[in-house]
Length: 86
Image 1 (tube, helix red, strand yellow):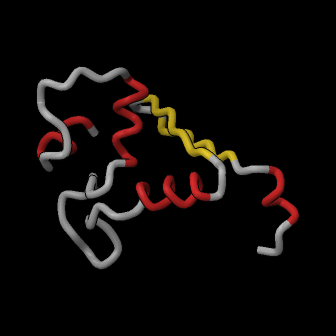
Image 2 (image 1 turned 90 degrees about the horizontal axis):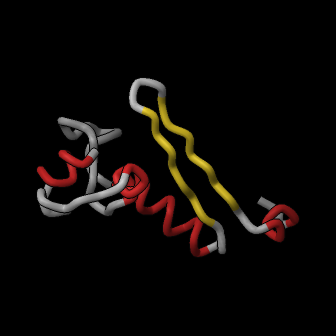
């Protein structure tokens, strides 16, 4: 993720980040991990929109990744949203 963000000019190459900060790079606007743009991926629009919409509702989203094992996304929304008609 770090190399993709550097390659796309979103962060400087000499930036020192923690593991958690590197995981959070997925939420940068314009960041895509796809090598090629297709009709369903590669535009760099997505996770930044997810995070901003969840924050607008008063919630939060986080990610924890373990190389070779996968990622866990945690979404936390205010309890008051549970009683709204979806």
